[in-house]
Length: 197
Image 1 (cartoon, helix red, strand yellow):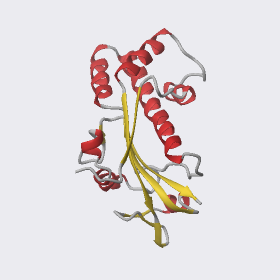
Image 2 (tube, helix red, strand yellow):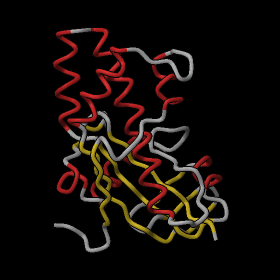
Image 3 (cartoon, one colour):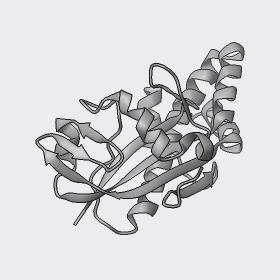
């Protein structure tokens, strides 16, 4: 059942420009580098990618040192606690680029190692670019802390489960979680972004 406070952002491949610097880092190339194969893979990816983001705006409390209370769960993390310094609210979000990307990567893994490598790098850079795009919409001019994801530093990956449940990510985004707390579709992100006064 969808919670009334969950908001959605959607986009297609043409709406979100893939950050070229992020892509260069993932490909291990110089900034601005491109060739026919990279552009061909990018064009194919843009046709199948379907970005979706579910997010909520929640109050946050600090009941103890290194503890953040999000209302629906408590997180013990020194790094998240420091990241949320000066914040009394946060956006909790889940984002995905869709299952068609996973299918394309599975197909390319068999057909072409080069195209698989390039498309995987493109898809990773694309979901990060969509996260930036969605965060800009959420912020709407507000000052926010950098987004912070489960699995980063001491913010436990096991917290993916309550995150995804609260955001109805299975129903709204098609995101599922395996026993190791990894998401399907693979190119999916969960994150918190503190809102500064």
